[in-house]
Length: 124
Image 1 (cartoon, rainbow, N blue to C red):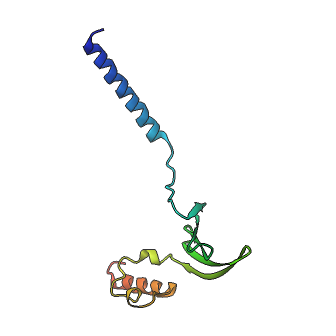
Image 2 (tube, rainbow, N blue to C red):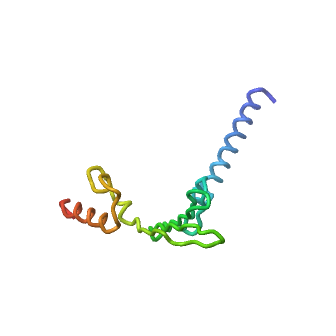
């Protein structure tokens, strides 16, 4: 075999390998991205810890709810805060709003801000 035919066979083999890898990549089902850190996610529920042994944070991404529990030791937890973030994720810019000026806002305050902004927007 000549040098030219060996080169052609090598290029054909590489092209075939690239084609097979591309088919395998595009045919495989998409899988969710997993973040590294001190938590885990299963069935749209994420569990995270803050300070070691202090707080447990549960985030339900389907219901858009955050719950915070205090660890009392011996396997006992107490709910210390819960909040829906349904409207929080709809806030486009918090500059010059009560969110930025104070100690935060409640669920209902965020809803009222969004309702007021929608009322001022023509065509809605």
